[in-house]
Image (cartoon, rainbow, N blue to C red; front, side):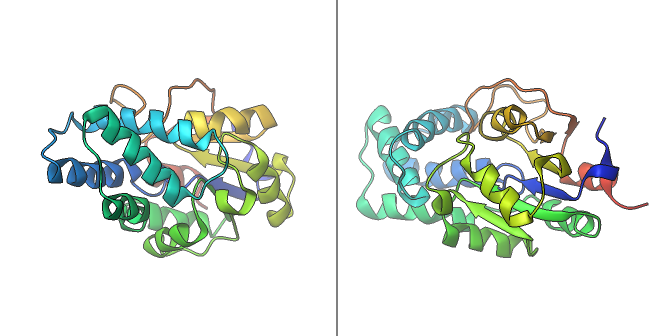
Length: 233
């Protein structure tokens, strides 16, 4: 059970938790495949392929996220037998700005912000996250991007930076995320309490994230349920 009396801040993963990156990725990849006459293998199969290539690129030397996406698209093209154009690679890398927010994210954040300080730890570039933040319509108390720390989760470096910017020990922070692999595994290893926003509840597989196992303190299906559980009154 979460002891809310001792919690001052909620920190969030952005993509998959607040922004519907699976819809955004599937739509952007599907458009490229269609342009090359390649039959789409189905959203989940496409997302699993994306997860494999994105993770491999992020595990290497640091590259900006727009370039990570572009490299993942090139690798997917090699597997499926086509070569994306330079313009398609650039556009896919910038497509993050077009990925939609989940309908419940903005209002849930506003409600939670009346009780908690809000932070973000995201595997993204500063400018791309800024576009997503505008979609959410919420100002966060602290934002840490992969670009700022030169590393992608599950690398744990960003958690320490976020603690410093919030000015709080991890015992007074709860980390909220969809991805077990990127967020819950490192956060639990560091001693954080975590909430799993299980956006894929009832669907097989892990979608756009690699398979992983973790034990969060609380599981909710969406941000609206979290706000209802933790909001004042």
